[in-house]
Image (cartoon, rainbow, N blue to C red; front, side, top):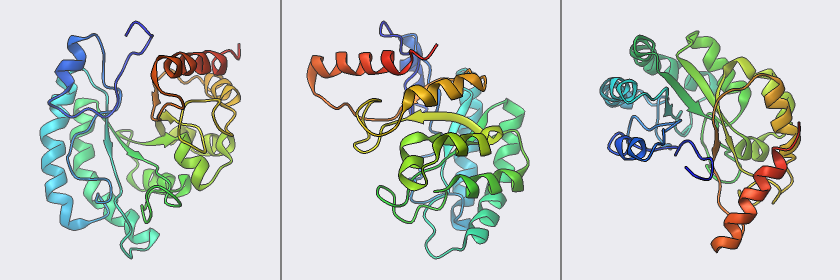
Length: 231
């Protein structure tokens, strides 16, 4: 917290109170233990997912958390259209609960080229189609800059194309998936662009650290200061 960190991402329900005890929130929380290779595109999991989200969305709201993460799952032979149809069918009852508690269910965009082979929600266009199919303010996309640079690039233009559907943003440079300035992505320009669009949310540091120990931690802080010095 003394470093300016406000949140720890991807904590489960049993961990939320510990973060709160130390003055931290969880800007993107787990509401189910179903792994990301499985998800809402599999109708066989819809009952399990509905049970998990039905139980944990009210708990998230009570804990003051606004976002819970979800995943499409791997394609396992499904077409893009079938995946959207299955996800929509599974998400619709979940989103009714989320809307009631003013919690947003956010599906992560992951790259399928390197890290998550066969993952279905791997392009912004597919995610946007699912958002349009659902037509709910309780459903958004998690735009992970590292993953989308890996899978499709054109970061600024793609952010613009799906801006209304983006609910949360995570950071990681490429290659290496470490802090900004360690790879090819111009985070200063991206941060400037996100700021110009009025983004007020937390940016999730979804990456490793390039150098070990205290030296690496100080370098990470400096990298963020440099990338954030666009004003």
